[in-house]
Length: 296
Image (cartoon, rainbow, N blue to C red; front, side, top):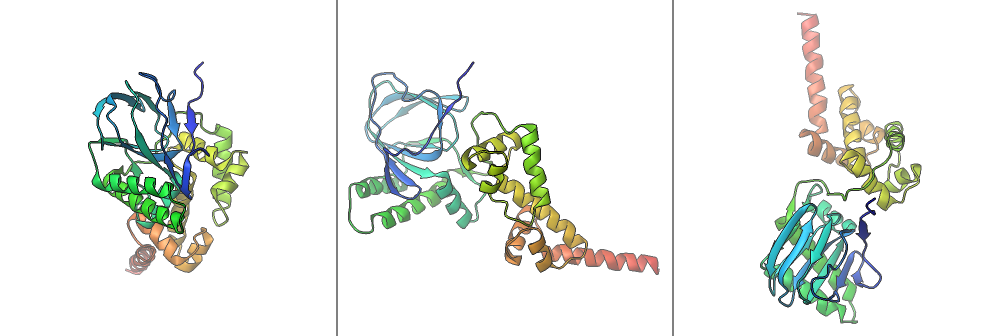
């Protein structure tokens, strides 16, 4: 029986620069020894190669990749993509680790909530190299503003990665057991019954006695989407029905759990391609057409 694939988290031994951003200087192993069994990161990692490792073999998911890496090359390892690396000789590198929460927050601020990093190896990126080296310098500095500068540099790095090395796919998930049919049904029924209430990941995870971390991944494994995306989708669909029934926009926003009309407007337009006002006007046109037909 295959053992479960390890999910490596941002460890206490890493240099945590500020919330969601850490620096890692790996210790090199002997010739030809994988640095891990097949595993996945619970964070996004950007690695800058500092010395020539020669031919380099790794696996992203089921894809086997060979590459001749050299000084200045950059490797982008997204969270939750299975990895196995074998290097023929020791080499030096610096890695910046970005938590999934940090990157998702930046993506949301950019209006790119659906984007996710792609596994990438490239011969160089001056911007990435500059930020990684500066963060490495900051890790040695205990002066005032260290965390503030690290946060600014990490945000700039995240923006650059999302612009140049991200796609529209959902977050990839390692192969693992999802929620059972009964557990998934319990969560879905709760969402439907309490669409206007607090449907945070923490609350939903508690229904099936999971940590939020494991709940998100097991929900995605079972449905192909995240709990948050499922909640937003059902709220938008319920709002569409209520607007079609003639309820006012403010009333609908409150009835389906959106914090404001603007919040409702944002998600309806993103998922349906129209505004709540468009749906209301469409219902009004249908009513006029029906009245004209009845009295025609």
